[in-house]
Length: 633
Image (cartoon, rainbow, N blue to C red):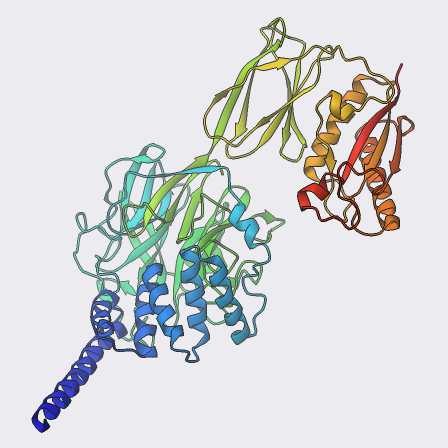
């Protein structure tokens, strides 16, 4: 027994020693940012049952810093399961990792804890989060032909070509593996645009610009003679020693400028506002090329990285860098700026409200000031990292993403505005007679008129509308009933023939227009009397009928459900009736042709009286307005 105890003790001690040795090796790799190699060792140690906050922190970080959010979330979850107090950064990283997995409710819990630990309740305000989730921009996104299984990112316009950054190994001038990503250092490549997402086979961009270290984020002047780009601290064949390296021995980033002279990129200069103590990267040019925008973590930065601007004075002279301020920058990361049409700023951020990882935002420019950034929504953004958007016309462009379904670690995508063509012919529903004297009114989903047209001599029409958006077509011919047809969100061209019923209805006093013309009951939200968008659309139908019959008078009768007191409901219905009347007057109906009366709960349409349990749906049937003809000549 004694011998067995000794053997067991020795075995346990040996395992403990082995784990410590492995952790020491992994820690060295981790400190050198060799995350791929460090992960392999850390995970082997974890598989043997070893647990510690430090181990789970480093595993989570190693995946997080490589934008592999699913395994990062796994290890951060284990970290928080230890019930130990953690630094604020880990709450934030777990929050971002969970968002990338679309676990938004859980993610927001950790955001709240992060805000609590940092006393920063305004960070990434989630009050409109559901709105961001539902928002869809009118673009379609397609993968491009230049993507590989490696990193492909940072597209930039250059003449009729695209210059981009890649870690692909097949065309590099110098092969050298980056410890952080376990891929080749990034270089610039160029491909000619043949058709939107189809680009020619890439070529190495320049033997003078590409070095044995990382290059990224090229931007060119309109004449193609000057470029700005990001590079590790490397110039004239030497990596910075003791310069451009921070206390963790990380080679910092700097912005450089080069000139195109005698068919070669030369005269490479480091910009004077770089530093050996912080990074400067991702340049972007204003439309007039007098201002350079860039990203930095220099002193005065509000978060992990901020966007700055600096005046270009010529002869390698620049003004004083200025932070774009808290409207643009947050306590998160703002990066990859681009100045597009009308001087609008496009950039990526994980500090503003987004879907996960980095999201792309647009900040419109007004009188030299950038307005509050707007999330560009799906499909421009995803639950993963989306960044580096460029566009010449807001109709088409390119962006980078590591979204699901990609070919590599980062991929370059083409995007364009999506439009649909709706066409058809307008005829009599009984005789199939072509109706030429017919107007079409195009309404948005809230009933606002956005366009109008008249069918041609053959009764045909054709309209072009945005995809992924709901519309209505209101068809008007004075001898026929007004027809309103919904156009549901689609992405394909559609044929829609419109058939109208001849106007033969005899109107009498007491006629309910809602029944005659199949107009929906006007509903109101509980305790409200404001006109809902769907209600506005239906009221507009009544307005059109009254315009067709200018001597028709209508009584607006408003009703409530049985909840609340009789007096309260009487006042509420009266407000609703008057609100409806005001809306109709504002839209062209003379006030003397209208009356408005509130009946409260005295005319219920079902059994939902006081003390009777009813569903919300049944109660809503009583919250209505009716339109009764009181006079017609």
